[in-house]
Image (cartoon, rainbow, N blue to C red; front, side):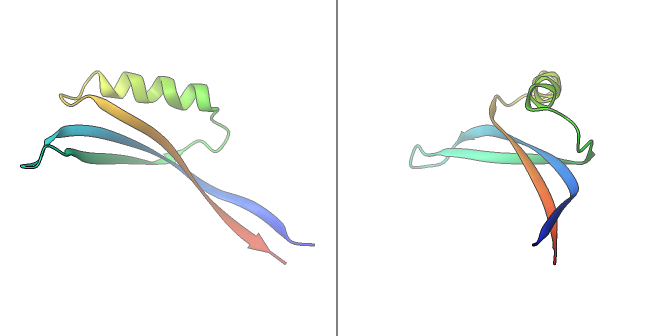
Length: 72
């Protein structure tokens, strides 16, 4: 049976940075590494909200990216 080991977690904030010439939204993202693996979704969302207050562009989306190693 295979075993999955959580190696790391990253927090990615996606901001709406304006519109292009056709009226489509433009996005930019900022990724934060070395996030505690034990962090809950609520804790990550609170951190994202606190960080977004310091940014000029509105926060569009918050993502959690986990990397996992699969062992045989």
